[in-house]
Length: 269
Image 1 (cartoon, helix red, strand yellow):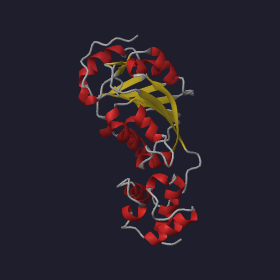
Image 2 (image 1 turned 90 degrees about the horizontal axis):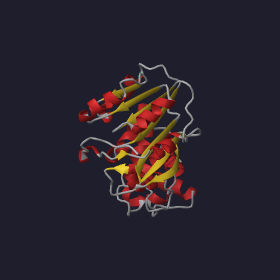
Image 3 (image 1 turned 90 degrees about the vertical axis):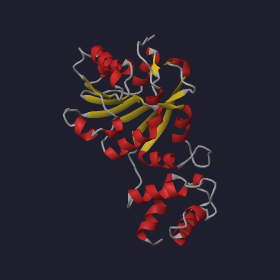
Image 4 (image 1 turned 180 degrees about the horizontal axis):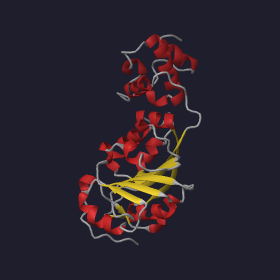
């Protein structure tokens, strides 16, 4: 059981893992080929960082809390394959930071600060880096939202966007009792694998905007939420799936949103 002599900061969402058994389960979800590089955000006390350093060629960990610099630097002073960057990950030039490493396989494995879970995922997507696998610990309800299916209460815009890019799997739950300090919610380990057969899009930004606009007012229909789009084209696409403009966005699959976006971009059906 890990113990920490640090001052925890709520503003950084600091809840450190204390159980090595949980860490072993997390890293056990991936097989790390030779010459693998792992990116971690929020190493905290370094319990996951240490395990990753034993299994991978390189570990790059981003830590925003400079008060942890002495602790982390001391813990990994003899670990030549660990690089700790004291910087806000969301402001980091990720491609530049990893360009100095000669790696063949790239992973993202992290107990991320929960308040920036979605921005972190969006940054990884926008980086266009080719990850073998992304494994994140998130709040349980967030994990449910990311992996939800059409027609369920938790299905939303972020669900559609993430499922366009990834095959998403809920791996296992983690009790709040496994952290110091103990948070108010339970957590979940969730994995993301790049889709091998991704839907073809004419314009990703158009698709993204369409998805967000469709869920702008979740209880409203597409007819109301998409007034600024060509409703005649939208109606024809929906008819092909047995729906009409009175449908709500939460009922539509990723495939339907892709076809809506492509048809609108072509201005024809």
